[in-house]
Length: 156
Image (cartoon, rainbow, N blue to C red):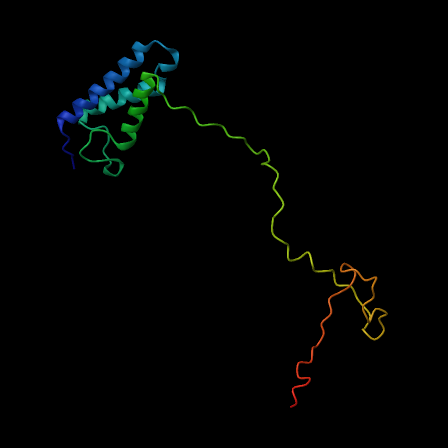
């Protein structure tokens, strides 16, 4: 199935290709010269446009009424910018696998800090610290649970 491409659009793209090629040649600056790949790209686009009226055939790659696919139009725009001296900057190489900044300590409290390792202890009857001594510090004593009688004095 052949596509109908407007001849005006094809000629307009051909003129853009020529202007881009001419601007790159006329600039004379080594950083504005077209690379081998870019020259080959422009040549192949020109050849396909003159032969078929369009430079692509897959309708998934761009608007079927246009002469260039979306990616081809983007590359042509980049080549035109390069010829004008406004080429995009290359991507930074990054910092590799270097370590990031040291991590700060978390601001919250760790729930596992209060848990002591299970150590075998004697039954409460034989323990010498059955009552709280004044020398016990919170780090050395273990938590104890007490039963509070709430029914005292209710009269039932």
